[in-house]
Image (cartoon, rainbow, N blue to C red; front, side, top):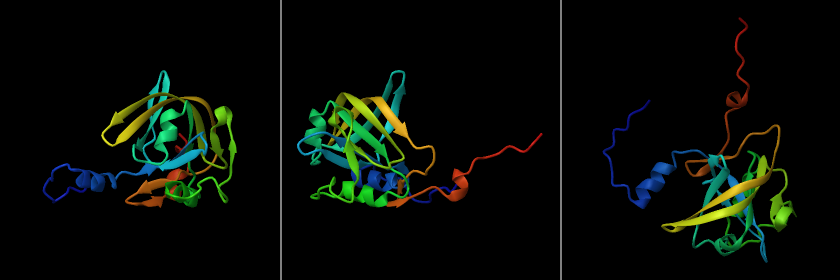
Length: 177
Protein backbone atom coordinates (compact mmCIF):
# COMPACT_ATOMS: atom_id res chain seq x y z
CA UNK A 1 0.00 0.00 0.00
CA UNK A 2 1.47 3.40 -0.91
CA UNK A 3 2.44 5.59 2.02
CA UNK A 4 1.88 9.33 1.78
CA UNK A 5 5.02 11.42 1.98
CA UNK A 6 3.04 14.55 2.79
CA UNK A 7 2.87 15.89 6.32
CA UNK A 8 -0.50 15.67 8.11
CA UNK A 9 -2.69 18.77 7.80
CA UNK A 10 -5.46 20.20 9.94
CA UNK A 11 -8.80 18.54 9.19
CA UNK A 12 -10.66 21.65 8.03
CA UNK A 13 -13.53 21.44 5.52
CA UNK A 14 -11.27 21.88 2.46
CA UNK A 15 -8.83 19.17 3.60
CA UNK A 16 -11.71 16.82 4.41
CA UNK A 17 -13.34 17.44 1.01
CA UNK A 18 -10.01 16.66 -0.70
CA UNK A 19 -9.57 13.46 1.31
CA UNK A 20 -13.14 12.28 0.66
CA UNK A 21 -12.55 12.54 -3.10
CA UNK A 22 -10.44 9.37 -2.66
CA UNK A 23 -13.48 7.41 -1.46
CA UNK A 24 -15.61 5.86 -4.19
CA UNK A 25 -19.33 6.20 -3.48
CA UNK A 26 -22.42 4.77 -5.13
CA UNK A 27 -24.56 7.40 -6.81
CA UNK A 28 -28.19 7.61 -5.76
CA UNK A 29 -31.11 9.90 -6.50
CA UNK A 30 -33.51 10.59 -3.65
CA UNK A 31 -37.05 11.70 -4.53
CA UNK A 32 -39.86 13.02 -2.35
CA UNK A 33 -43.47 13.95 -3.08
CA UNK A 34 -44.57 17.55 -3.08
CA UNK A 35 -46.00 20.32 -5.19
CA UNK A 36 -43.76 20.10 -7.10
CA UNK A 37 -42.00 16.82 -6.35
CA UNK A 38 -38.30 17.08 -5.53
CA UNK A 39 -35.24 14.98 -6.15
CA UNK A 40 -31.49 15.28 -5.76
CA UNK A 41 -28.33 13.31 -6.41
CA UNK A 42 -26.63 11.95 -3.29
CA UNK A 43 -23.49 9.93 -2.66
CA UNK A 44 -24.12 9.66 1.09
CA UNK A 45 -26.55 6.72 1.04
CA UNK A 46 -25.73 3.86 3.43
CA UNK A 47 -27.24 1.04 5.42
CA UNK A 48 -27.47 1.83 9.13
CA UNK A 49 -29.17 -1.26 10.56
CA UNK A 50 -30.62 -4.56 9.40
CA UNK A 51 -32.70 -5.19 12.55
CA UNK A 52 -34.73 -3.10 12.14
CA UNK A 53 -33.86 -2.19 8.55
CA UNK A 54 -32.77 1.45 8.48
CA UNK A 55 -30.92 3.39 5.77
CA UNK A 56 -29.64 6.95 5.72
CA UNK A 57 -28.67 9.74 3.39
CA UNK A 58 -27.54 13.32 3.96
CA UNK A 59 -28.86 16.55 2.51
CA UNK A 60 -27.58 20.12 2.78
CA UNK A 61 -30.02 22.28 4.75
CA UNK A 62 -29.64 24.99 2.10
CA UNK A 63 -30.70 22.66 -0.71
CA UNK A 64 -33.84 23.51 -2.66
CA UNK A 65 -34.99 19.94 -1.93
CA UNK A 66 -34.65 20.22 1.85
CA UNK A 67 -38.06 21.86 2.62
CA UNK A 68 -39.95 19.02 0.89
CA UNK A 69 -37.72 16.31 2.43
CA UNK A 70 -38.14 17.94 5.85
CA UNK A 71 -41.93 17.46 5.54
CA UNK A 72 -41.99 14.12 3.68
CA UNK A 73 -43.29 11.00 5.40
CA UNK A 74 -41.88 8.85 2.59
CA UNK A 75 -38.96 9.13 0.17
CA UNK A 76 -37.50 6.89 -2.52
CA UNK A 77 -33.81 6.14 -2.87
CA UNK A 78 -32.73 5.06 -6.37
CA UNK A 79 -29.37 3.34 -6.93
CA UNK A 80 -28.24 4.42 -10.36
CA UNK A 81 -26.79 2.08 -12.97
CA UNK A 82 -23.49 2.88 -14.68
CA UNK A 83 -25.25 4.09 -17.84
CA UNK A 84 -27.26 6.73 -15.90
CA UNK A 85 -24.61 9.44 -15.62
CA UNK A 86 -26.83 11.98 -17.37
CA UNK A 87 -29.67 11.28 -14.92
CA UNK A 88 -27.25 11.85 -12.04
CA UNK A 89 -26.17 15.17 -13.59
CA UNK A 90 -29.80 16.24 -14.07
CA UNK A 91 -30.67 15.65 -10.42
CA UNK A 92 -27.44 17.38 -9.32
CA UNK A 93 -28.26 20.54 -11.32
CA UNK A 94 -30.02 23.43 -9.61
CA UNK A 95 -32.70 25.47 -11.29
CA UNK A 96 -33.96 22.84 -13.77
CA UNK A 97 -37.10 20.73 -13.87
CA UNK A 98 -35.49 17.43 -12.92
CA UNK A 99 -38.66 15.48 -13.72
CA UNK A 100 -39.07 16.85 -17.28
CA UNK A 101 -38.04 14.76 -20.29
CA UNK A 102 -35.84 12.91 -20.88
CA UNK A 103 -36.28 11.80 -17.21
CA UNK A 104 -38.68 8.86 -17.13
CA UNK A 105 -40.63 8.31 -13.93
CA UNK A 106 -44.01 7.44 -12.46
CA UNK A 107 -45.87 8.15 -9.27
CA UNK A 108 -45.26 5.29 -6.86
CA UNK A 109 -46.64 4.29 -3.48
CA UNK A 110 -47.38 7.17 -1.09
CA UNK A 111 -47.18 9.57 -4.06
CA UNK A 112 -43.38 9.31 -4.20
CA UNK A 113 -41.78 9.68 -7.65
CA UNK A 114 -40.14 6.43 -8.81
CA UNK A 115 -37.50 6.74 -11.53
CA UNK A 116 -37.53 4.19 -14.35
CA UNK A 117 -34.71 1.78 -15.18
CA UNK A 118 -32.56 2.31 -12.10
CA UNK A 119 -30.41 -0.50 -10.75
CA UNK A 120 -32.61 -0.56 -7.63
CA UNK A 121 -35.03 1.57 -5.65
CA UNK A 122 -36.33 1.59 -2.10
CA UNK A 123 -39.51 3.28 -0.90
CA UNK A 124 -38.77 4.34 2.66
CA UNK A 125 -40.70 5.76 5.59
CA UNK A 126 -38.75 8.59 7.22
CA UNK A 127 -38.19 7.79 10.90
CA UNK A 128 -35.91 10.66 11.93
CA UNK A 129 -33.99 13.69 10.74
CA UNK A 130 -30.89 14.72 12.63
CA UNK A 131 -29.31 18.11 11.99
CA UNK A 132 -25.52 17.96 12.02
CA UNK A 133 -23.67 21.10 10.96
CA UNK A 134 -24.97 22.31 7.61
CA UNK A 135 -26.64 18.97 6.75
CA UNK A 136 -29.48 16.77 7.88
CA UNK A 137 -28.98 13.04 8.25
CA UNK A 138 -32.25 11.43 7.19
CA UNK A 139 -32.95 7.99 8.68
CA UNK A 140 -35.56 5.92 6.89
CA UNK A 141 -37.07 2.44 7.03
CA UNK A 142 -37.39 0.64 3.68
CA UNK A 143 -40.97 -0.57 3.12
CA UNK A 144 -40.87 -1.69 -0.52
CA UNK A 145 -37.93 -2.28 -2.82
CA UNK A 146 -37.09 -3.51 -6.28
CA UNK A 147 -33.75 -4.36 -7.86
CA UNK A 148 -32.49 -5.48 -11.24
CA UNK A 149 -30.91 -8.91 -11.57
CA UNK A 150 -28.07 -7.53 -13.70
CA UNK A 151 -26.22 -4.26 -14.03
CA UNK A 152 -23.32 -2.34 -12.63
CA UNK A 153 -23.59 0.63 -10.23
CA UNK A 154 -22.69 4.19 -11.05
CA UNK A 155 -19.85 5.34 -8.79
CA UNK A 156 -18.47 8.78 -7.95
CA UNK A 157 -14.72 9.04 -7.40
CA UNK A 158 -12.31 11.97 -7.51
CA UNK A 159 -14.95 14.37 -8.75
CA UNK A 160 -16.23 12.31 -11.66
CA UNK A 161 -18.50 9.39 -12.47
CA UNK A 162 -16.93 5.95 -12.77
CA UNK A 163 -17.85 2.29 -12.96
CA UNK A 164 -16.44 -1.04 -11.98
CA UNK A 165 -13.78 -2.64 -14.16
CA UNK A 166 -15.26 -5.43 -16.27
CA UNK A 167 -13.17 -8.11 -14.57
CA UNK A 168 -14.38 -7.00 -11.13
CA UNK A 169 -18.02 -7.66 -11.99
CA UNK A 170 -17.41 -11.22 -13.18
CA UNK A 171 -18.25 -14.08 -10.87
CA UNK A 172 -15.19 -15.57 -9.22
CA UNK A 173 -15.12 -19.35 -9.72
CA UNK A 174 -13.19 -21.76 -7.53
CA UNK A 175 -11.08 -24.33 -9.31
CA UNK A 176 -12.44 -27.88 -9.29
CA UNK A 177 -11.05 -30.01 -6.48
